Amino acid sequence: MQMHIRTLRAADDAAIETIIRECLIEFGGNREGLAWQDDSLSALSAFYAGEDREYWVAVSEDGSLLGGCGIAPFAGSADVCELQKMYLIGEARGTGAAGELLRTALGFAASRYRECYLETLATMEAANRFYRKHGFRELGAPLAGSEHFACDAWYIRPLQTDPKQTDWSQTDHKQTDLKQTDRTQSGQNQAGWKSRRVDGMGSSVFSKVFAWKEEAVRLGREMIDLSIGTPDRPPAPEIRRALSAAALREDAYGYPGTRGSIAFRQQAAAWMAHRFGASVDAELELLPLMGSQDGLAHLAQALCDPGDLALVPDPGYPIYAGALRLAGVTPHLLPLRRENGFLPDLSAVPDEVWSRARFILVGFPGNPIGARADESDFAQLLALARKWNVLIVHDLAYSELGFDGYRPMSILALPGAKEQAIELHSCSKSFNMPGCRVGFAAGNAAAIGALHELKGHIDFGVFEPVQEAAIEAFRLAMAAPSGDRGVAPLYERRRDVFCAALAAEGWHVDKPAATMFIWAELPERFLRGGRAGSASVFAGELLLATGVAVVPGEAFGVEGEGFVRIALVREEDTLREAARRIGRFIRGEIAEV
Image (cartoon, rainbow, N blue to C red):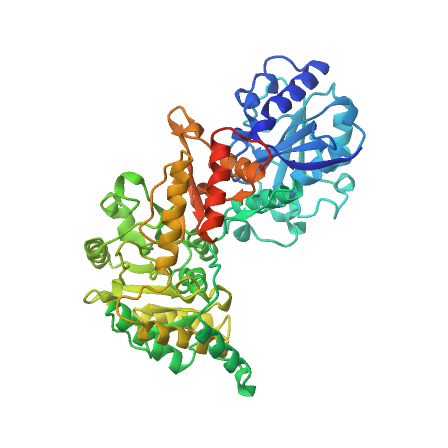
Protein backbone atom coordinates (compact mmCIF):
# COMPACT_ATOMS: atom_id res chain seq x y z
CA MET A 1 0.00 0.00 0.00
CA GLN A 2 1.39 3.39 -1.02
CA MET A 3 1.20 5.89 1.85
CA HIS A 4 3.12 8.58 3.71
CA ILE A 5 3.23 9.93 7.26
CA ARG A 6 2.59 13.58 8.14
CA THR A 7 1.45 15.61 11.12
CA LEU A 8 -2.23 16.08 11.84
CA ARG A 9 -4.03 19.13 10.44
CA ALA A 10 -7.18 20.80 11.68
CA ALA A 11 -8.92 19.68 8.49
CA ASP A 12 -8.24 16.06 9.52
CA ASP A 13 -10.02 16.26 12.88
CA ALA A 14 -13.37 14.87 11.75
CA ALA A 15 -11.83 12.02 9.74
CA ILE A 16 -9.46 10.84 12.47
CA GLU A 17 -12.22 11.04 15.09
CA THR A 18 -14.36 8.79 12.89
CA ILE A 19 -11.53 6.26 12.51
CA ILE A 20 -10.87 6.17 16.25
CA ARG A 21 -14.53 5.80 17.18
CA GLU A 22 -15.11 3.03 14.63
CA CYS A 23 -12.07 1.13 15.94
CA LEU A 24 -13.28 1.51 19.52
CA ILE A 25 -16.69 0.16 18.55
CA GLU A 26 -14.99 -2.76 16.75
CA PHE A 27 -13.14 -3.78 19.91
CA GLY A 28 -15.80 -2.94 22.48
CA GLY A 29 -14.13 0.29 23.55
CA ASN A 30 -17.14 2.59 23.13
CA ARG A 31 -17.66 3.02 26.86
CA GLU A 32 -16.73 5.02 29.92
CA GLY A 33 -13.12 5.08 31.08
CA LEU A 34 -11.63 4.93 27.58
CA ALA A 35 -10.69 7.36 24.79
CA TRP A 36 -14.32 7.24 23.64
CA GLN A 37 -15.18 9.90 26.21
CA ASP A 38 -12.10 12.13 25.81
CA ASP A 39 -13.11 15.76 25.33
CA SER A 40 -10.21 16.26 22.94
CA LEU A 41 -11.33 13.58 20.50
CA SER A 42 -13.22 16.02 18.28
CA ALA A 43 -10.32 18.52 18.08
CA LEU A 44 -7.11 16.50 18.22
CA SER A 45 -5.14 19.04 16.15
CA ALA A 46 -5.62 21.61 18.91
CA PHE A 47 -4.82 19.15 21.69
CA TYR A 48 -1.54 18.12 20.06
CA ALA A 49 -0.42 21.65 19.16
CA GLY A 50 2.04 22.09 22.07
CA GLU A 51 5.83 21.74 21.92
CA ASP A 52 5.82 18.60 24.05
CA ARG A 53 3.35 16.63 21.93
CA GLU A 54 2.45 15.73 18.36
CA TYR A 55 0.01 13.58 16.38
CA TRP A 56 0.76 11.91 13.05
CA VAL A 57 -1.50 10.37 10.43
CA ALA A 58 -0.87 7.81 7.72
CA VAL A 59 -2.25 9.07 4.41
CA SER A 60 -3.03 6.89 1.42
CA GLU A 61 -2.08 7.68 -2.17
CA ASP A 62 -5.52 9.20 -2.78
CA GLY A 63 -5.23 11.49 0.26
CA SER A 64 -7.57 9.61 2.60
CA LEU A 65 -6.54 8.91 6.19
CA LEU A 66 -5.59 5.37 7.19
CA GLY A 67 -5.08 6.06 10.89
CA GLY A 68 -2.76 7.79 13.31
CA CYS A 69 -1.05 7.97 16.69
CA GLY A 70 0.12 10.65 19.09
CA ILE A 71 2.72 11.42 21.74
CA ALA A 72 2.02 13.60 24.79
CA PRO A 73 3.46 13.88 28.31
CA PHE A 74 2.04 11.33 30.73
CA ALA A 75 0.41 12.89 33.81
CA GLY A 76 2.45 16.06 33.41
CA SER A 77 5.78 14.20 33.60
CA ALA A 78 8.86 15.71 31.99
CA ASP A 79 10.43 12.25 31.66
CA VAL A 80 7.63 9.89 30.65
CA CYS A 81 5.41 10.34 27.60
CA GLU A 82 2.40 8.34 26.48
CA LEU A 83 1.73 6.77 23.11
CA GLN A 84 -1.89 7.72 22.51
CA LYS A 85 -4.78 7.01 20.18
CA MET A 86 -3.00 4.63 17.84
CA TYR A 87 -5.72 3.30 15.54
CA LEU A 88 -5.84 2.16 11.91
CA ILE A 89 -8.68 1.26 9.58
CA GLY A 90 -8.94 -2.47 8.86
CA GLU A 91 -7.48 -2.29 5.36
CA ALA A 92 -4.31 -0.59 6.67
CA ARG A 93 -3.49 -3.19 9.30
CA GLY A 94 -0.60 -5.46 8.38
CA THR A 95 0.62 -3.12 5.63
CA GLY A 96 3.49 -1.54 7.57
CA ALA A 97 1.57 1.66 8.28
CA ALA A 98 1.53 0.97 12.02
CA GLY A 99 5.29 0.42 12.09
CA GLU A 100 5.95 3.68 10.23
CA LEU A 101 3.67 5.59 12.58
CA LEU A 102 5.35 4.08 15.63
CA ARG A 103 8.87 4.80 14.35
CA THR A 104 7.91 8.41 13.71
CA ALA A 105 6.32 8.78 17.14
CA LEU A 106 9.21 7.17 19.02
CA GLY A 107 11.74 9.29 17.14
CA PHE A 108 9.93 12.42 18.33
CA ALA A 109 9.58 11.04 21.85
CA ALA A 110 13.23 10.00 22.20
CA SER A 111 14.42 13.58 21.82
CA ARG A 112 12.21 14.75 24.69
CA TYR A 113 11.49 11.90 27.11
CA ARG A 114 13.20 8.98 28.84
CA GLU A 115 10.37 6.44 28.59
CA CYS A 116 7.16 5.84 26.70
CA TYR A 117 4.06 4.42 28.39
CA LEU A 118 0.87 3.14 26.79
CA GLU A 119 -2.39 1.56 27.89
CA THR A 120 -4.80 -0.47 25.82
CA LEU A 121 -7.35 -3.29 25.91
CA ALA A 122 -6.37 -6.92 26.21
CA THR A 123 -9.05 -7.76 23.62
CA MET A 124 -6.97 -5.95 20.99
CA GLU A 125 -4.72 -8.98 20.66
CA ALA A 126 -2.93 -7.96 17.46
CA ALA A 127 -2.12 -4.55 18.94
CA ASN A 128 -0.69 -6.13 22.09
CA ARG A 129 1.54 -8.41 20.00
CA PHE A 130 2.65 -5.38 17.98
CA TYR A 131 3.66 -3.42 21.09
CA ARG A 132 5.60 -6.35 22.57
CA LYS A 133 7.37 -6.90 19.24
CA HIS A 134 8.50 -3.28 19.25
CA GLY A 135 10.11 -3.36 22.68
CA PHE A 136 7.25 -2.44 25.03
CA ARG A 137 7.32 -4.40 28.30
CA GLU A 138 4.00 -5.31 29.91
CA LEU A 139 3.27 -3.91 33.36
CA GLY A 140 1.16 -5.46 36.05
CA ALA A 141 -0.74 -2.26 36.76
CA PRO A 142 -1.15 1.24 35.30
CA LEU A 143 1.26 4.03 36.23
CA ALA A 144 -0.05 6.45 38.82
CA GLY A 145 -1.90 9.25 37.07
CA SER A 146 -3.67 7.14 34.46
CA GLU A 147 -7.06 8.58 33.44
CA HIS A 148 -8.43 5.67 31.38
CA PHE A 149 -9.53 3.39 34.21
CA ALA A 150 -11.16 0.85 31.88
CA CYS A 151 -7.89 -0.12 30.17
CA ASP A 152 -6.59 -3.51 31.25
CA ALA A 153 -3.20 -3.78 29.51
CA TRP A 154 -0.28 -1.44 30.24
CA TYR A 155 3.21 -1.19 28.72
CA ILE A 156 6.43 0.80 29.16
CA ARG A 157 9.46 1.19 26.92
CA PRO A 158 12.84 2.96 27.31
CA LEU A 159 13.58 5.49 24.61
CA GLN A 160 16.60 6.05 22.42
CA THR A 161 17.37 8.25 19.45
CA ASP A 162 17.13 5.45 16.90
CA PRO A 163 14.43 2.91 17.77
CA LYS A 164 16.06 0.41 15.42
CA GLN A 165 19.43 0.35 17.20
CA THR A 166 18.50 -2.21 19.84
CA ASP A 167 16.05 -5.11 20.01
CA TRP A 168 14.46 -4.08 23.29
CA SER A 169 12.18 -7.10 23.27
CA GLN A 170 15.24 -9.24 24.05
CA THR A 171 16.38 -7.02 26.94
CA ASP A 172 15.58 -7.70 30.59
CA HIS A 173 14.11 -4.50 32.07
CA LYS A 174 13.58 -3.80 35.75
CA GLN A 175 10.39 -2.28 37.14
CA THR A 176 10.10 1.41 36.21
CA ASP A 177 8.19 4.33 37.77
CA LEU A 178 7.99 8.09 37.22
CA LYS A 179 10.66 8.82 39.86
CA GLN A 180 13.32 6.63 38.25
CA THR A 181 16.40 8.64 37.23
CA ASP A 182 19.09 6.01 36.66
CA ARG A 183 20.24 6.34 33.05
CA THR A 184 21.26 2.70 32.72
CA GLN A 185 17.93 1.39 33.97
CA SER A 186 15.99 3.72 31.67
CA GLY A 187 18.06 2.94 28.60
CA GLN A 188 19.08 6.60 28.20
CA ASN A 189 22.75 5.62 28.00
CA GLN A 190 21.88 4.33 24.53
CA ALA A 191 19.99 7.47 23.46
CA GLY A 192 22.59 8.62 20.94
CA TRP A 193 24.60 10.13 23.81
CA LYS A 194 22.55 13.31 23.83
CA SER A 195 22.18 15.02 27.21
CA ARG A 196 18.95 16.26 28.73
CA ARG A 197 20.60 19.67 28.81
CA VAL A 198 20.64 19.67 25.01
CA ASP A 199 17.03 18.49 24.91
CA GLY A 200 16.08 21.55 26.93
CA MET A 201 18.05 24.01 24.81
CA GLY A 202 15.35 25.29 22.52
CA SER A 203 11.87 25.08 21.17
CA SER A 204 10.75 22.10 19.10
CA VAL A 205 8.44 24.48 17.24
CA PHE A 206 11.24 25.30 14.80
CA SER A 207 11.55 21.60 14.00
CA LYS A 208 7.82 21.54 13.32
CA VAL A 209 8.09 24.52 10.97
CA PHE A 210 10.87 22.76 9.08
CA ALA A 211 8.73 19.63 8.74
CA TRP A 212 5.78 21.73 7.54
CA LYS A 213 8.00 23.30 4.88
CA GLU A 214 9.04 19.88 3.63
CA GLU A 215 5.40 18.78 3.50
CA ALA A 216 4.38 21.97 1.69
CA VAL A 217 7.06 21.37 -0.94
CA ARG A 218 5.87 17.79 -1.33
CA LEU A 219 2.37 19.12 -1.90
CA GLY A 220 3.69 21.38 -4.65
CA ARG A 221 3.25 24.69 -2.83
CA GLU A 222 5.29 27.66 -4.04
CA MET A 223 7.10 28.74 -0.90
CA ILE A 224 7.26 32.26 0.50
CA ASP A 225 9.45 31.75 3.54
CA LEU A 226 8.87 34.49 6.12
CA SER A 227 9.96 32.34 9.05
CA ILE A 228 13.69 33.07 9.31
CA GLY A 229 15.07 36.53 10.06
CA THR A 230 17.96 36.53 7.63
CA PRO A 231 18.58 39.61 5.47
CA ASP A 232 17.89 38.99 1.79
CA ARG A 233 20.23 41.73 0.54
CA PRO A 234 24.05 41.43 0.30
CA PRO A 235 26.50 43.68 2.15
CA ALA A 236 27.68 46.86 0.43
CA PRO A 237 30.21 46.31 -2.38
CA GLU A 238 32.94 47.97 -0.31
CA ILE A 239 32.42 45.41 2.46
CA ARG A 240 32.62 42.51 0.04
CA ARG A 241 35.75 43.91 -1.57
CA ALA A 242 37.40 44.31 1.83
CA LEU A 243 36.56 40.70 2.68
CA SER A 244 37.84 39.42 -0.66
CA ALA A 245 41.10 41.36 -0.52
CA ALA A 246 41.81 40.22 3.04
CA ALA A 247 40.98 36.60 2.25
CA LEU A 248 43.52 36.62 -0.60
CA ARG A 249 46.38 37.58 1.70
CA GLU A 250 48.70 34.70 2.48
CA ASP A 251 49.10 35.76 6.10
CA ALA A 252 45.36 35.83 6.84
CA TYR A 253 44.93 32.19 7.82
CA GLY A 254 46.53 31.92 11.24
CA TYR A 255 44.59 31.69 14.49
CA PRO A 256 43.14 35.18 14.97
CA GLY A 257 42.95 35.09 18.78
CA THR A 258 39.89 35.55 20.96
CA ARG A 259 40.57 39.23 21.64
CA GLY A 260 40.48 40.03 17.93
CA SER A 261 42.62 42.61 16.20
CA ILE A 262 43.28 45.96 17.81
CA ALA A 263 42.07 47.55 14.55
CA PHE A 264 38.67 45.84 14.92
CA ARG A 265 38.29 46.81 18.56
CA GLN A 266 39.25 50.42 17.93
CA GLN A 267 36.93 50.77 14.94
CA ALA A 268 34.01 49.18 16.82
CA ALA A 269 34.64 51.53 19.75
CA ALA A 270 34.77 54.50 17.36
CA TRP A 271 31.45 53.44 15.83
CA MET A 272 29.89 53.20 19.31
CA ALA A 273 30.97 56.78 20.01
CA HIS A 274 29.78 58.02 16.61
CA ARG A 275 26.44 56.21 16.59
CA PHE A 276 25.41 56.32 20.26
CA GLY A 277 27.69 58.78 22.01
CA ALA A 278 28.95 55.90 24.17
CA SER A 279 32.59 55.82 25.25
CA VAL A 280 34.10 52.32 25.32
CA ASP A 281 37.70 51.34 26.10
CA ALA A 282 38.82 49.20 23.16
CA GLU A 283 41.38 47.41 25.34
CA LEU A 284 39.29 46.38 28.33
CA GLU A 285 35.62 46.95 27.51
CA LEU A 286 35.11 45.43 24.05
CA LEU A 287 35.32 41.83 22.80
CA PRO A 288 34.72 40.54 19.23
CA LEU A 289 32.13 37.78 18.90
CA MET A 290 31.11 35.28 16.24
CA GLY A 291 27.80 37.11 16.04
CA SER A 292 25.90 38.33 19.07
CA GLN A 293 24.42 34.86 19.57
CA ASP A 294 27.93 33.65 20.39
CA GLY A 295 27.99 36.01 23.35
CA LEU A 296 24.43 35.26 24.39
CA ALA A 297 25.11 31.51 24.34
CA HIS A 298 28.20 31.73 26.55
CA LEU A 299 27.52 34.68 28.83
CA ALA A 300 25.63 32.80 31.56
CA GLN A 301 28.47 30.28 31.83
CA ALA A 302 30.95 33.13 32.19
CA LEU A 303 28.96 35.10 34.77
CA CYS A 304 27.01 32.53 36.79
CA ASP A 305 27.31 29.36 38.80
CA PRO A 306 24.74 26.53 38.65
CA GLY A 307 21.74 27.46 40.77
CA ASP A 308 22.08 31.20 40.17
CA LEU A 309 19.09 33.14 38.86
CA ALA A 310 18.71 35.42 35.83
CA LEU A 311 15.78 37.42 34.48
CA VAL A 312 14.89 36.96 30.80
CA PRO A 313 11.96 38.15 28.65
CA ASP A 314 9.05 35.95 27.58
CA PRO A 315 8.63 35.88 24.65
CA GLY A 316 12.31 36.13 23.86
CA TYR A 317 14.94 34.92 21.44
CA PRO A 318 15.29 31.16 22.15
CA ILE A 319 18.99 31.28 23.07
CA TYR A 320 18.12 33.47 26.08
CA ALA A 321 16.53 30.58 27.95
CA GLY A 322 18.64 27.95 26.20
CA ALA A 323 21.88 29.48 27.45
CA LEU A 324 20.56 29.44 31.02
CA ARG A 325 19.74 25.77 30.63
CA LEU A 326 23.31 25.07 29.50
CA ALA A 327 24.73 26.93 32.49
CA GLY A 328 22.33 25.43 35.06
CA VAL A 329 20.91 28.88 35.79
CA THR A 330 17.31 29.32 36.93
CA PRO A 331 15.28 31.67 34.72
CA HIS A 332 12.77 34.18 36.05
CA LEU A 333 10.54 35.08 33.12
CA LEU A 334 9.50 38.67 32.45
CA PRO A 335 6.17 38.64 30.56
CA LEU A 336 6.00 40.99 27.57
CA ARG A 337 2.34 41.87 27.10
CA ARG A 338 0.33 44.29 25.03
CA GLU A 339 -1.05 46.15 28.06
CA ASN A 340 2.48 47.23 28.96
CA GLY A 341 3.59 48.08 25.45
CA PHE A 342 5.36 44.70 25.25
CA LEU A 343 7.94 46.00 27.74
CA PRO A 344 8.73 44.16 30.99
CA ASP A 345 6.92 45.39 34.08
CA LEU A 346 9.98 45.74 36.30
CA SER A 347 7.92 46.93 39.26
CA ALA A 348 6.20 43.53 39.34
CA VAL A 349 9.45 41.64 39.97
CA PRO A 350 9.50 40.56 43.64
CA ASP A 351 12.31 41.82 45.85
CA GLU A 352 13.28 38.21 46.55
CA VAL A 353 13.93 37.68 42.83
CA TRP A 354 15.96 40.88 42.52
CA SER A 355 18.04 39.86 45.54
CA ARG A 356 18.92 36.51 43.94
CA ALA A 357 19.38 37.69 40.36
CA ARG A 358 22.81 37.66 38.78
CA PHE A 359 21.81 39.48 35.60
CA ILE A 360 18.76 40.73 33.69
CA LEU A 361 18.65 40.31 29.92
CA VAL A 362 16.61 42.71 27.77
CA GLY A 363 16.50 43.76 24.13
CA PHE A 364 15.09 47.13 23.05
CA PRO A 365 14.09 46.58 20.30
CA GLY A 366 14.10 42.80 20.43
CA ASN A 367 13.28 39.57 18.71
CA PRO A 368 10.46 38.60 18.25
CA ILE A 369 8.88 41.92 19.38
CA GLY A 370 10.19 45.23 18.07
CA ALA A 371 8.96 47.24 21.06
CA ARG A 372 10.30 50.74 21.63
CA ALA A 373 12.11 51.74 24.81
CA ASP A 374 13.09 55.32 25.61
CA GLU A 375 15.71 56.83 27.88
CA SER A 376 13.30 56.84 30.83
CA ASP A 377 12.84 53.05 30.48
CA PHE A 378 16.61 52.54 30.53
CA ALA A 379 16.98 54.89 33.49
CA GLN A 380 14.43 52.89 35.50
CA LEU A 381 16.20 49.65 34.63
CA LEU A 382 19.60 51.07 35.52
CA ALA A 383 18.34 52.36 38.89
CA LEU A 384 16.96 48.94 39.83
CA ALA A 385 20.12 47.19 38.68
CA ARG A 386 22.22 49.48 40.85
CA LYS A 387 19.92 49.00 43.82
CA TRP A 388 20.17 45.23 43.68
CA ASN A 389 23.66 44.95 42.14
CA VAL A 390 22.38 43.11 39.06
CA LEU A 391 24.22 43.21 35.75
CA ILE A 392 22.19 44.43 32.76
CA VAL A 393 22.72 42.52 29.52
CA HIS A 394 21.29 44.50 26.60
CA ASP A 395 20.88 42.65 23.29
CA LEU A 396 21.02 45.43 20.68
CA ALA A 397 21.31 43.36 17.51
CA TYR A 398 18.60 45.50 15.85
CA SER A 399 20.06 48.91 16.65
CA GLU A 400 19.98 50.04 13.01
CA LEU A 401 16.41 48.97 12.27
CA GLY A 402 14.34 51.69 13.92
CA PHE A 403 11.35 53.21 12.10
CA ASP A 404 9.36 56.44 11.99
CA GLY A 405 12.22 58.54 13.34
CA TYR A 406 13.03 56.13 16.18
CA ARG A 407 16.75 55.38 16.54
CA PRO A 408 17.34 52.73 19.22
CA MET A 409 19.74 53.92 21.91
CA SER A 410 22.60 52.23 23.69
CA ILE A 411 22.28 51.84 27.44
CA LEU A 412 26.03 52.52 27.57
CA ALA A 413 25.30 56.13 26.58
CA LEU A 414 23.82 56.75 30.04
CA PRO A 415 26.22 58.16 32.66
CA GLY A 416 27.84 55.41 34.71
CA ALA A 417 26.04 52.61 32.84
CA LYS A 418 29.27 50.76 32.09
CA GLU A 419 29.57 49.97 35.79
CA GLN A 420 26.33 47.98 35.60
CA ALA A 421 25.79 46.88 32.00
CA ILE A 422 27.14 45.20 28.91
CA GLU A 423 25.68 45.35 25.43
CA LEU A 424 25.81 42.98 22.46
CA HIS A 425 25.96 44.18 18.85
CA SER A 426 25.76 42.31 15.57
CA CYS A 427 26.82 43.07 12.01
CA SER A 428 24.29 40.53 10.71
CA LYS A 429 21.20 42.72 10.61
CA SER A 430 22.86 46.16 10.68
CA PHE A 431 25.09 45.57 7.64
CA ASN A 432 23.56 42.51 5.89
CA MET A 433 26.39 40.22 7.05
CA PRO A 434 24.64 37.23 8.73
CA GLY A 435 26.91 34.60 7.18
CA CYS A 436 30.07 36.38 8.29
CA ARG A 437 29.28 35.71 11.96
CA VAL A 438 30.75 38.83 13.52
CA GLY A 439 29.67 41.21 16.25
CA PHE A 440 30.94 42.35 19.63
CA ALA A 441 30.16 42.79 23.30
CA ALA A 442 30.96 46.04 25.08
CA GLY A 443 30.60 47.49 28.56
CA ASN A 444 31.54 46.45 32.08
CA ALA A 445 35.21 45.45 32.03
CA ALA A 446 34.87 42.61 34.56
CA ALA A 447 31.98 40.98 32.68
CA ILE A 448 33.74 41.40 29.33
CA GLY A 449 36.87 39.91 30.89
CA ALA A 450 34.96 36.89 32.18
CA LEU A 451 33.44 36.26 28.75
CA HIS A 452 36.86 36.65 27.14
CA GLU A 453 38.37 34.16 29.56
CA LEU A 454 35.64 31.57 28.91
CA LYS A 455 35.83 31.96 25.14
CA GLY A 456 39.59 31.60 25.34
CA HIS A 457 38.95 27.99 26.35
CA ILE A 458 36.43 27.45 23.54
CA ASP A 459 37.50 29.14 20.29
CA PHE A 460 40.25 31.15 18.64
CA GLY A 461 38.23 34.15 17.59
CA VAL A 462 36.75 35.63 14.42
CA PHE A 463 38.48 34.99 11.07
CA GLU A 464 40.67 38.06 10.38
CA PRO A 465 39.27 38.81 6.88
CA VAL A 466 35.80 38.86 8.45
CA GLN A 467 37.04 41.34 11.05
CA GLU A 468 38.37 43.53 8.23
CA ALA A 469 35.02 43.37 6.47
CA ALA A 470 33.35 44.51 9.70
CA ILE A 471 35.87 47.34 10.04
CA GLU A 472 34.85 48.54 6.57
CA ALA A 473 31.18 48.30 7.55
CA PHE A 474 31.76 50.52 10.59
CA ARG A 475 33.76 53.00 8.48
CA LEU A 476 31.04 53.22 5.84
CA ALA A 477 28.38 53.83 8.48
CA MET A 478 30.46 56.60 10.07
CA ALA A 479 31.18 58.23 6.69
CA ALA A 480 27.52 58.21 5.58
CA PRO A 481 25.80 61.60 5.18
CA SER A 482 23.98 63.05 8.17
CA GLY A 483 20.51 61.58 8.39
CA ASP A 484 21.44 58.37 6.57
CA ARG A 485 19.60 55.49 8.24
CA GLY A 486 21.35 52.52 6.68
CA VAL A 487 19.11 49.49 6.22
CA ALA A 488 16.17 50.90 8.22
CA PRO A 489 14.27 52.52 5.29
CA LEU A 490 14.19 49.19 3.42
CA TYR A 491 12.45 47.38 6.27
CA GLU A 492 10.23 50.35 7.10
CA ARG A 493 8.87 50.35 3.53
CA ARG A 494 8.35 46.60 3.67
CA ARG A 495 6.57 46.94 7.01
CA ASP A 496 4.21 49.57 5.61
CA VAL A 497 3.51 47.65 2.41
CA PHE A 498 2.89 44.35 4.15
CA CYS A 499 0.76 45.71 7.00
CA ALA A 500 -1.38 47.64 4.49
CA ALA A 501 -1.75 44.56 2.31
CA LEU A 502 -2.79 42.42 5.29
CA ALA A 503 -5.30 45.06 6.38
CA ALA A 504 -6.81 45.03 2.88
CA GLU A 505 -7.24 41.27 3.29
CA GLY A 506 -8.98 41.68 6.64
CA TRP A 507 -6.12 41.09 9.08
CA HIS A 508 -5.12 44.19 11.03
CA VAL A 509 -1.74 43.78 12.75
CA ASP A 510 0.35 46.12 14.87
CA LYS A 511 3.14 47.98 13.09
CA PRO A 512 6.44 47.38 14.87
CA ALA A 513 8.55 50.36 15.93
CA ALA A 514 11.69 48.54 14.82
CA THR A 515 13.33 45.27 13.60
CA MET A 516 12.50 43.09 10.61
CA PHE A 517 9.60 41.27 12.28
CA ILE A 518 5.83 41.62 12.54
CA TRP A 519 4.46 40.28 15.86
CA ALA A 520 0.91 39.52 14.81
CA GLU A 521 -1.99 38.40 16.95
CA LEU A 522 -4.03 35.69 15.26
CA PRO A 523 -6.95 36.87 13.08
CA GLU A 524 -10.43 37.12 14.59
CA ARG A 525 -11.59 33.99 12.78
CA PHE A 526 -9.08 31.99 14.85
CA LEU A 527 -10.25 33.26 18.23
CA ARG A 528 -11.73 30.67 20.54
CA GLY A 529 -13.97 31.85 23.34
CA GLY A 530 -12.78 35.40 22.80
CA ARG A 531 -9.12 34.36 23.04
CA ALA A 532 -6.59 33.47 20.39
CA GLY A 533 -6.40 29.82 19.46
CA SER A 534 -3.31 27.75 18.82
CA ALA A 535 -0.64 29.59 16.87
CA SER A 536 0.93 26.26 15.87
CA VAL A 537 -2.30 25.08 14.29
CA PHE A 538 -2.66 28.40 12.47
CA ALA A 539 0.93 28.49 11.20
CA GLY A 540 0.92 24.84 10.14
CA GLU A 541 -2.37 25.06 8.28
CA LEU A 542 -1.34 28.37 6.69
CA LEU A 543 1.90 26.91 5.37
CA LEU A 544 0.37 23.73 4.03
CA ALA A 545 -2.52 25.57 2.39
CA THR A 546 -0.65 28.56 0.95
CA GLY A 547 3.09 27.99 1.08
CA VAL A 548 3.60 31.02 3.35
CA ALA A 549 5.85 30.15 6.29
CA VAL A 550 5.65 32.03 9.60
CA VAL A 551 6.73 31.04 13.13
CA PRO A 552 4.21 30.26 15.91
CA GLY A 553 4.70 32.62 18.82
CA GLU A 554 5.12 29.86 21.39
CA ALA A 555 8.53 29.17 19.83
CA PHE A 556 9.66 32.19 21.84
CA GLY A 557 7.93 31.37 25.13
CA VAL A 558 4.52 30.69 26.64
CA GLU A 559 3.56 34.38 26.33
CA GLY A 560 3.86 33.98 22.58
CA GLU A 561 0.77 31.78 22.29
CA GLY A 562 -1.85 33.45 20.13
CA PHE A 563 0.76 35.27 18.03
CA VAL A 564 2.94 34.53 15.03
CA ARG A 565 6.23 36.13 13.99
CA ILE A 566 6.51 37.19 10.35
CA ALA A 567 9.91 38.19 8.92
CA LEU A 568 10.06 41.01 6.37
CA VAL A 569 12.79 39.30 4.38
CA ARG A 570 11.33 39.33 0.88
CA GLU A 571 10.81 42.08 -1.70
CA GLU A 572 7.64 44.15 -1.61
CA ASP A 573 5.87 42.38 -4.48
CA THR A 574 6.47 39.02 -2.80
CA LEU A 575 5.15 40.38 0.50
CA ARG A 576 2.00 41.56 -1.30
CA GLU A 577 1.56 38.08 -2.78
CA ALA A 578 2.05 36.55 0.67
CA ALA A 579 -0.66 38.86 2.04
CA ARG A 580 -3.04 37.81 -0.75
CA ARG A 581 -2.52 34.14 0.05
CA ILE A 582 -2.94 34.77 3.77
CA GLY A 583 -6.15 36.67 3.07
CA ARG A 584 -7.62 33.74 1.19
CA PHE A 585 -6.66 31.45 4.06
CA ILE A 586 -8.14 33.54 6.87
CA ARG A 587 -11.39 33.95 4.94
CA GLY A 588 -11.69 30.19 4.67
CA GLU A 589 -10.87 30.00 0.97
CA ILE A 590 -8.44 27.12 1.39
CA ALA A 591 -8.43 26.04 -2.24
CA GLU A 592 -5.18 25.32 -4.07
CA VAL A 593 -3.04 28.46 -4.32
